[in-house]
Amino acid sequence: VMRWQLLFNGVQLKAPQNYLFASLATGYLVNFVIPRLGEITRALVLKRSLNFPINTSLSTIILERLVDVISLGVILGFAFALELGSSQSVLLQFTKDVVWLTPAKILMLLAFLCIATLIYFQIRKRKDLVSKWINELMENIFSLVNMKQKAPFIIYTIIIWVGFYLMTYLWIFMFEESASLSAYEAFLVMVLGVVARTLPIQAGSAGAYHFVVGQALLFMGISISTGNALALIIHGFQTLVTLVLGFSAYIWLIYKSKN
Image (tube, rainbow, N blue to C red; front, side, top):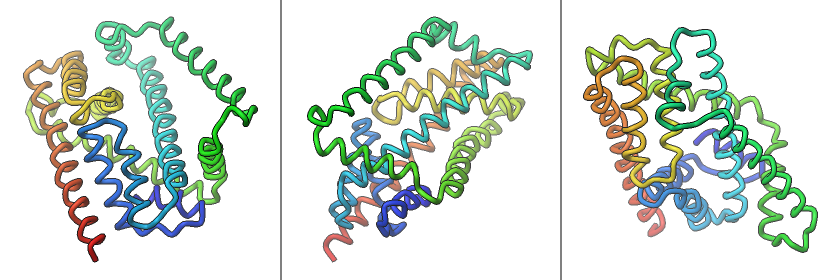
């Protein structure tokens, strides 16, 4: 919430933390049912509650997601780099045996992203082909990139990822078998779990998350039953928090709108 508030400060909008939190919790609740719709819901909530322009809110949300994707890419690269100097090769083995991801496929994906980026900028040069709404949205995003409070934004981003890690690491002590995992192995489980949760699947990527985490723990020598149980507990707790906070925020927004 505090990181999101910094972005609104960058476009000269005073965004109260309580409304931002309610919007965020409601968006996560909607994402739980219909993936990716929650981002639009967040903007609509702020439009109705604070009369914030939808385009401006969406630009802050898109920039947040872009930063998170870049952060995930950096963390993945860091994790693969750590494996080069380690006796373990969980990520490499996992991507090869479970995801069937090869270096050639990675290069093809990067080439596709580069081509798509070039096409976008070529289209953007011809303003007659791009709607006013898209132009305004992109201008807002580029203005946010140049915001003054970059250091606090980066610090908040790091804190968010540390929180993601702790949500995995602290649960490994739930079972005697998984308690033997190292902080580094918990980091690898977190990385793969976050990748699984980025998939547009209902109920917080249920199924995909359980499979990925269970298989990753199996590669680390943890039995499949313990791995699946641990994945169920981690995902279940996060689901419970999402539902409780989401419904509470929705009820609070209804109450505020009536008053």
